[in-house]
Length: 120
Image (cartoon, rainbow, N blue to C red):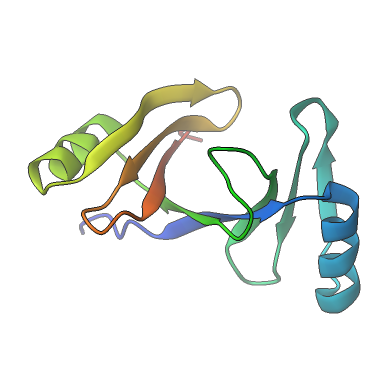
């Protein structure tokens, strides 16, 4: 069976990490996990896709949402993106304990991330 390339992670931009965590925790009762050394926090909606809060920056302006698509072969997927007219923004790099990640822009201008998780 072919790999389904599921959406595996979503990031919301935040101007104020504490305020954003409190808002989503209060409204949706999501459990928030902090990564202080990374200025990052994650949550998982029950039965849903994992997600995180990313500080506002030039690469992640206010109002932006980054969708991560799971792929079993990051380099092959990047080649398919290039061939189909996409632009690679950040080539594959390792995230310790997580896997390999890359970002691209689709022909419309949407920024999207790929994640090749570590094999368990």
